Amino acid sequence: MNTNPSPSPSTETGPDSSDKPTRDEALQAVKTLLRWAGDDPDREGLLATPDRVVRSYDEFFGGYDVDPDEVLQRTFEEVEGYDEIVLLRDIDFVSHCEHHMAPIIGRAHVAYMPDNRVVGISKLARIVEAYARRLQIQEKMTAQIANSINEVLKPKGVAVVIEAAHQCMTTRGVNKTGVTMVTSRMLGLFRSNASTRREFLALVGSPQTR
Image (cartoon, rainbow, N blue to C red; front, side):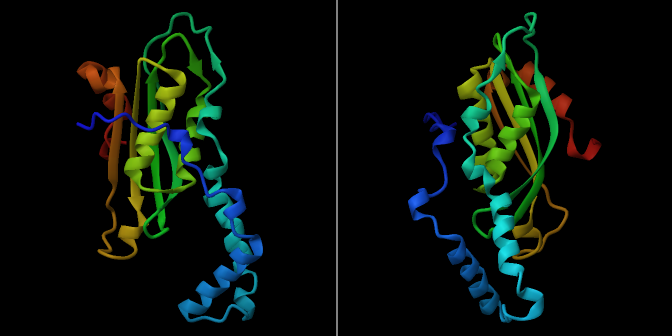
């Protein structure tokens, strides 16, 4: 078990804005890749491709512009003493592998046990999106989501399970389709209390039974 404290999840952002290439430089980079692939970026079918790719990158990697801690700041204390599991299940996401920039397509299950305050459920989905829309590895993304919720909400426990298919494995390399990677991160009561952990896993269910 790693006993080293986890770094603050929101400290990892994109490059300093002063170091970020211009949009024109990004467009030229796409043209270079098209030429390297063996095609002609000036042919009719590819004329608009650099612009489309750059605009898609704005969407794919928009998580670098989001501070996950700020997403969780607004909470509600009028919960009538509710202190059981809060679970948002089957949060679809698309991320990209930081090794090959290939898509990671999956779903996340996020739960916490509140301690006097709760957060709007849409914020849990936004936390997943904030970390998914970055270059990622699934293990790190799982930890980042859990650590962020734990640090900001300070609940009694946090649990995150992610199931995803990695296109860097299914479309290249070993070319194994139908393979799903599952990662989990348990903090607080979900880690120390076996019955709480079992309850969460039963609520999430097995991928084969859903």
